[in-house]
Length: 204
Image: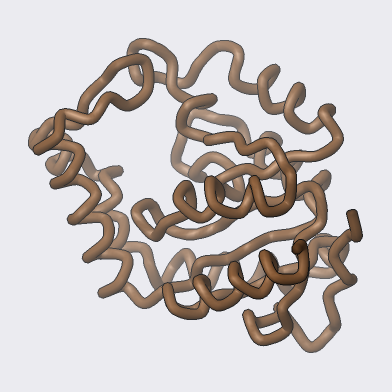
C-alpha cells in the first residue's frame, strides 16, 4: 500500500488534494463530529484495523483503564492502525506522553474541522439516540440524561471549545516537530464524504 505523501510547507491538505492516508492514521475532531463513524468507514477501505480510543481508555468504572498506556503501546507496535482520535483529551487522566507517542508514530491525521453548529447538532443527535435506544457503550454502560450535566460532555465541549481546539490543532499541524504527519483538513461533512469517496476510488 502506498504511504501518504509528505505534507507541503504551505499547510494541511484539503479534501480536494485527495491525499491517500498512510498506514498509521489518527482522526481529530470534537466529540460528536463523526470520528468513529469515519474510522469505521475508512478502515476497511485502507485495509487497516480500527481502534476506538474510548473503548481503550475507559475501565469498568468509567475511569482510565489501568492498562491504557500498555494498550496504546501495543497498538503502536502493530505496524498499521487507524485510531478514531488524535489522543486522549488534555483534561483527561492520561499523561501527555500518550498523545505525544501517538503523534510520533502517526503518518496521517484526518482533521474533522467542522463549524460549531454542525458539531453541536451532531453531538445532540448522538446523545439522544444513545439515550432513547439505550445503546450499550463501554463495559455495558449506557448514557443517561444526567451525563448532560457533566462539564466534559461532548455537547458542552462543542459549545465551549470549538474555537480553542481549532487554534490548538492549527498550531500543532504547522509545528515542524510534526512535519512527518500528513494532515487532511475537512471542513464539512460533505467534504468528508467526497474525500472518502476519492480515497475509496483510488483504493479500488
